[in-house]
Amino acid sequence: MTGLFITIVNMSITASYVALAVIIARCLLKRVPKIFSYILWSAVAIRLLIPVSYTSAFSLMKLVQPASRQETRILEYVPHDIGLQKNPVLDVGMSSIRQLFPLPKAALGASMNPMQLYIGLGMMIWLTGVVALLAYTVYSYLRVRRTVRTATLVRDRIFETDRITTPFVFGIIRPRIYIPTGIPEQGLRYMVEHELVHIRRGDHIVKPIAYLLLIVHWFNPLMWLSYRLMTKDMEMSCDERVVRAMGDGSKTGYATALLSIAIDRSHLRLPGPLAFGESDVKARIKNILAFRQPSSKLVVVILFFVGMLVTGFLANPKPIQPSALPLQSTVTDNDQIYDLDKLMANQTLYVGNASKVGGLISGLPHPQGMEGKGMELQTKEEPYGVTIIYELTNTEQSKGTDLYYRNAILLLSLINNVDYITYRINHKISDRESSAMEITISRAEANQIIGEDVRHFAESKQSVRKLIDRVEYLYNGQH
Figure 1: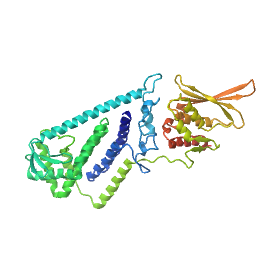
Figure 2 (figure 1 turned 180 degrees about the vertical axis):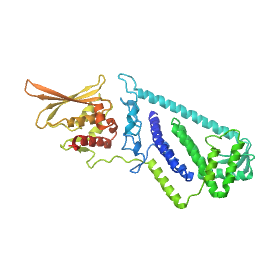
Figure 3 (figure 1 turned 30 degrees about the vertical axis):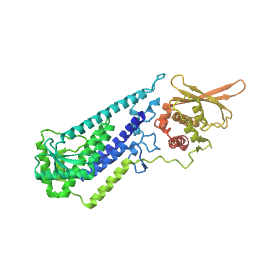
Figure 4 (figure 1 turned 180 degrees about the horizontal axis):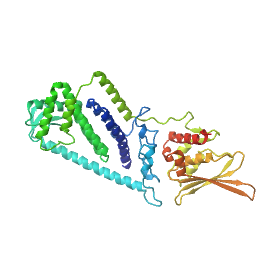
């Protein structure tokens, strides 16, 4: 269940970025028919509903791409294993502010990682909210159904009752139009046509789906704003459809009908989340009077623009392309090999897993002129560390310290809770004399060299390969 909750959170974060972009796009489309703004909200709905997507070089999500899971079809801002991480990181998708969201670290000797507790508590709060909103929705539905059960059939699917103050559509499978009594015939004509447009377009299905998505993502304030703006665009685009069907001469009569309903109501009484009611009357009247049908050429241009936006919002950034070298092994300039298969098979959350750590070391390039003499693991207390022991066998072949730094960065990426990597190099001068040198690279130093938390690269072959390419460039490409 916690996995589902984290998936919901990741979808909500992704949808938030799309929603912000849609809100900006709505401002750019302020003077065009509202149907185009209404269409844009479909990208937000899909992001809220489906956790995976296709990848494209034309994705508009590049600026908010999380560093982790870049190779998959999932934008994962909150790692699914965050409850097991020693130093959990919330990746908001922008490297400049990625470190501004500190999360509680795992405590040495604690029976539970604090993040596991917080994730579990967050999941319970989320479930409570979902259940409460679903209960309210059922109550609202039953209340509206009870209110209109005495309505009188006027014709077809149109019913009239004195127990409501505004026309609305109610029902999904067999939607009906309910109108208050006392509306003049001319005004009634406009109101009925408005509700019929809702039914023809399938808005009576779209709105309940949107509300159910809002229930799932109720913890995100931006989704409440998005739902509010989406319903506003829905109503206004419906008004424009009525004006287009009845002609520009209907604007005054239509606006008057809306105004009369607003004046007659002593208070705002919406039928509920699963029904349509007349709202934002002032804004709708202004939009009706200002509406101008654009030319067919302009419609084509706007439709193309909106289509490109929706496509770009739905696409994930294209995976980072690996270089021409095979993924199974990466050859350095010294013919030394990074065995990516072995590295991926042995990545581990815990430095205490000796077999995994040994497997990682064996998958890294071996320093020339050195003989491996084992390793030591510091797991009793923090900081946790790995000491790799070498014995110098050929001083002519041994080179600088670059390889140690490159290997250490890889190990700090693939061992989640290790804090430092130390290389102890023993040099036997004679039977009675020897010397030793140590090189230590900390996690903080590795992160500073790369410019971000190196653990973000441990998700796949492609992302590890990206890290290898980066360290090779840093230590070899500049020379």
